[in-house]
Image (cartoon, rainbow over all chains, first blue to last red; front, side):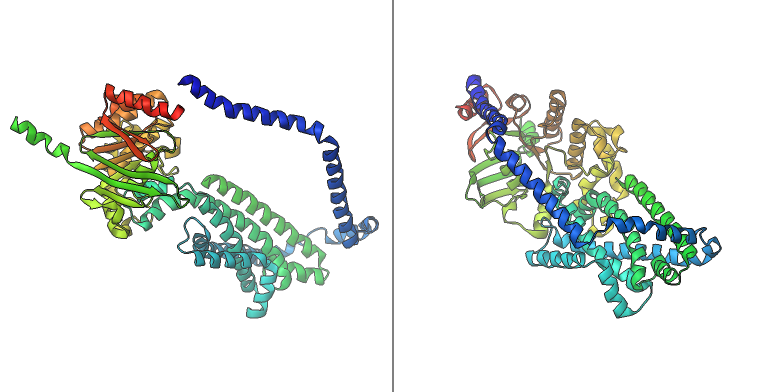
Length: 283
Length: 261
């Protein structure tokens, strides 16, 4: 019996060894072909990079001659207009609140969508495709385009920016949330189902504790992303520091610009560190 | 004599009666082919068989984690194979399952995991936000004491060793107050000492607790040592169903010899 058993074990192992030997021998057999393929891949990559230089009209010389202009702007921007700190606080708060609103409403909409869009828990196939479609659409359209659309619809100010961040976040979060649910350990779900617990009880006692840390981590990361996006959204009239920055640039108030850039730097760094800290807490 | 008979009568109550159970997968493979099996109160019955013989499928069909194609699964007088929705949920209260990987909610405390076994007896509304009724906690403490891990109640489930997690999983099953426990390879990922302890505990639950225990194992020695009956499953068919004695030993040897040959 043991001999037979050993024979059964040995057969696949010998097959594996044979396969490994084949693999080891392969480079010497297919050596020239493989090298030719590598050269071709390198040429294709070089070609792709070269065409990008042509299309973007890259002129490294201009970068060197432009240093003078950049130094001039920097010197005019120094020192930052510290006396205007008071005026910077409101747009800074607006920027933070854009990110908070965008993330919170994005999460609130993304969670139910993700449940419908997760293949393992979706209640019906048509709902799965519908949810996947909504997620793809909201994700594919950049937040800047959403902001332009909402500025047209509801006018200038932070509200269109907040709506743009919310809608784009639905897509980004919905997809990631759905993946978390699809990768969830189903063992505890089965275990609680067999205790005679209702579907809602299973959801709140097994599904939620299983996926919550990942969902919180992703949401915090999204907040971080939304904060950066909210800075740019101001350029299309959707409020926040970006709007103030654009105005200062247009009025050649470079010292105000440098103050706003300092505020932006502090804000982004604080959000990055803060969300990283919180993500570690919920992991 | 008559008193003794009267004492043993409730112990012999049938807790699980499987009749003509067939299970065919969508790809046409027949996983179970007319399985008949009875498990009584106070009895630990072990199913043995090679990989793919249908052991786990049988347990999952009994628990209705998979739908059988044909046949009856009678637990507490009800045919689980015919039930759905709320009726199935209520019928499931009578059976609990212990899984190979314990299947605890990793981030919750051991105590919360054990108390969650009682969820089926509680109204959904009160427990929806992840809370557990305070009156279940003393029971959870008591069950942790029974399975020998009372000091671990406050720890997170993902800090437990394999044996401790399996004990906590058994405590969760007991919190359900079941009449039948299904155990799917409960010692597969444990070291030999922990495996012996878990099997001893399951046998004790059957004998002292009056529960019916149906267990799937891959270790014939453990099956013979702790079970009252051993059932051999080959290609979805019951090859033998015998008391765990020397006679069964021979049949088990033949069951695995056939596999190797």
